[in-house]
Length: 119
Image 1 (spheres, rainbow, N blue to C red):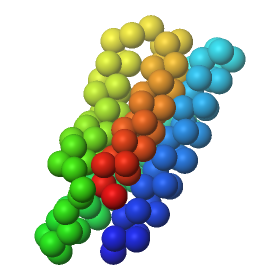
Image 2 (image 1 turned 45 degrees about the vertical axis):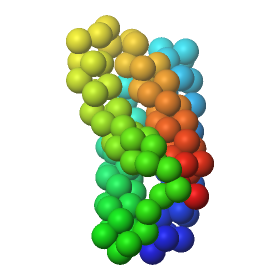
Image 3 (image 1 turned 90 degrees about the vertical axis):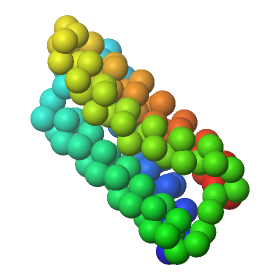
Image 4 (image 1 turned 180 degrees about the horizontal axis):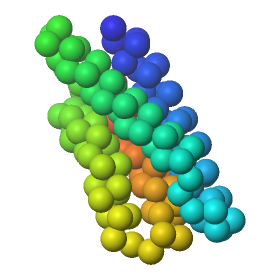
């Protein structure tokens, strides 16, 4: 289970990198937030929730991260996309991809920090 949590973290990092680049490129191409991009954001959020569920199951199994900050980084990463989605609703439409792209890169950074504090 521990290896699954670790490998899935790498998947989250790579997925968020792709989402970040996609959002930033979409902003400069002025394509806006498409249905495909919104769908991949939802898949990314599901991945973060699954990663959190794996982590919680590890805690109940007796495993603990090396530093308690691991919980902060992991927990915060789950809330970033929903907060961004509520923020983008009140912003001009053309800014959405940039906000999501930067947010995805931020989540990638949180996941990297979580990996650093977890091992």
